[in-house]
Image (cartoon, rainbow, N blue to C red; front, side, top):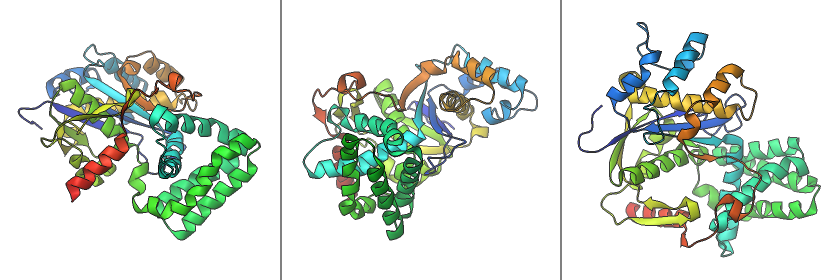
Length: 362
């Protein structure tokens, strides 16, 4: 696929289970993107080629010792650098917690005139809940609570809402620490506005493919300093949200820096449009499949024991960690300084983009 006149970036995902964020076999989502050409991609993939190999796929190669060696050799290619390949990760269980904070707690705070995104309070609160909830409320009640939140967002029925707030009530009642119980209270109180929240939410809001895509588009726009085109391997979430995502892309509008602290970015996105490709026809997509899948395998090893420890260690020792663009991942930190989210001015990105979309849809 050739797009003349603008740089082209290829995207591919690994570990996408949609809204099934508690999938035990695939607890990590990864998105990789690259600006290398098809010619460069072919050279990079050469070590993995055999006379019988028409398409280089991580899932196929990792099944044999020889295939795993070929993967590592490809990943060690000098051309694979942070200047032309990027990868980002999402800890899916933690993502559920961040969505509870963003959709429920932040909405409550916004009604009271508070901006939860300043000083990274939303990140701090997500970290706190992720680590404290199973300790103070029990792992069983926490699991039920998270599952019922996902069900409520996906199903949006009266029954699903009642089930979720029943689980939230049980969680609050089980809290062994009174201070933590008070921190849980806004989630319970959010029931009074849940219908409005759900009216503007659907199951794609739980899919990590959307924020990951946005993050990569923001990076490449900054990298090129201007417009670029992109080709994405098959992605249900991106396909379903294609119109909305393209509405967030530049069409000659004035650019602004929005967001806070290290999360600031240029908006609108500098991507021009989204096209979808097939990896068997595009070697760039095969490269990002290899990188995304290797990255997902690597990060999963920090959550559960990897099935092939030697292979995991080889990936860990390779260049994948140098390609990391970002990660939605829990850390036991809550201070703005440690989170690098100290307020230094800026514009609330969520509100700005909501107004931008509203204007372009009217």
